[in-house]
Amino acid sequence: MNKFLLLISVVLMGEVAAAASPISDREGINYEVSLMGNAGSGDFAPYYMMVNRHGILTQSDDVLFRGKLWKRFDLSRRFSYSFGADFLTGASSQTTYHRYDDAGKLVDNRQRPAAIWLQQLYAEIKFMGAFLSVGLKEQEWSLLNSELASGDYLESGNARPIPQARIGFLGFQNIPFTRGWLQIYAVIAYGKFTDGNWLENHFNRNGRLTTGALYHYKCLYFRTKPAKPFSFAVGLQVAMQYKGTEQSYSKGKLTNTVKQPFCIEDIWKMLIPSFGYSRQEFYEGNSLGCWDIVLRYRLRNGDEIRGVYESPWEDDSGIAMQNGFDGIWGVEYKCAKENSPFQGVVVEYLDFTNQSGPIHWDPGLLSVSGTTLTQSRASGSDNYYNNGHYNGWMNYGLGIGTSVFPSPIYNLDGAMTYKNNRIRGFHAGVMGTIINGVNYKILGGYKKGWGTYGRPLIEPQENTSLLVDVTWRVPKLAGLSVKGEFAFDSGTMYGKNVGGLLTVSYSGTFNIGKK
Image (cartoon, rainbow, N blue to C red; front, top):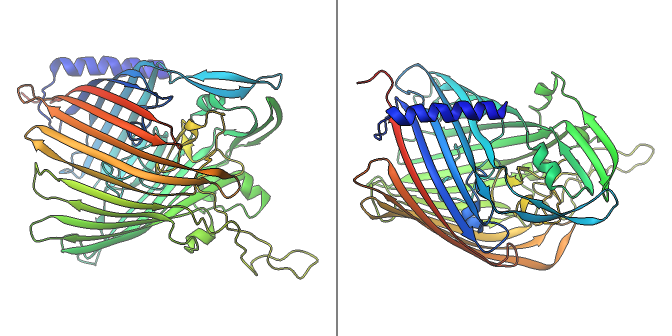
């Protein structure tokens, strides 16, 4: 089925390219074809070259061709539709993992990305300010700057998209009878993880592995009137891994299988966060989320300054913010003037070391039968992005949320969990125009990790990373751009990596029904 869909995409893109205009037009059908090649010194691409690309680039050496076709909503119309198709193909270097064979012996397990895969295939409709989307789509909406920030804590552009149905508002909408002084944004999504083959190929066959789990996401935000110089937004995001098939292994031997089949009532159950207080809840679902706060001030010249805070949680101790200063603390400057040498600047302080403490007792909530004890539930040791019965918060090995924690794809021992999530550090990004038609972006950061509370590292791991990105839009050939990137890592977290990436892209628009 996937090969059939890819064939359709290729044919459509060929037809579009033959009759398209290189001039961008949001009312037409847009296309983009690109060829990218990178080379590096490590097992993986350098950190900033790899993360927040929707999972398309992971290996140290790649040659990839990408074709995209999409139509945007016509926001001037009450009813409109959009769609998109996107595929990649090419060759990549392999990485050697380790796994147990049937005899209980550790053997080399060499893996590389598929030679061809479907990245996006979706259809959407909108009516006034609401939309419905179905399929594979890279989700871009976030209160954080998707170009310069380290990534939204819960759902960012770091991993490949998850097939899902999503319904909600197209951005913030005015709440009736508030005269625009209060706006609302809300989204609900249901989907299913389809990375089972990737997990089984990379898993070391020792411990637990869950495949076929359901995916659920929702968010709710309120914002004050953005036309005023000062405004703020506050809200929360909640996500869940639910049901699926859990397999337990011991050094290559399958010891137990637990299947949680889907029931229609699960749609309702997933709306309520599950913290695993009973054994059945613990098996069925894993909930996580974050509180988000954004303060924004617009200067007289139109420039904006924003302060952003994302506070993570894995259970109700985190919801009550009993996890200290944990979270993403960011400041952003955005220039209103086009072609400014400093179009945007982001600086973030990152801290995930508290996690509600190594253990945190909530007294009086549950009692132990036959005793006078009431301190019978522990809700600390949040262990961000990990769960006892589900894989780490990832898709195809990369974190669905922020890229700050080293994703399970880096685990050469084939473990499907986050081994280093007690991290502290900073991240910074800046972008702008060098000369007309030539833009740049620089990302850099430092972080230090102590492992997890359950398995602390003997020696902390550190990492310093940098990326320099320069894009040239060829003036005499509209739609053609050339991008060069250089990046490196230094430290014990990702190793010493150096890499370069060159991308040549051509984009345009096919104007249906227009002369």
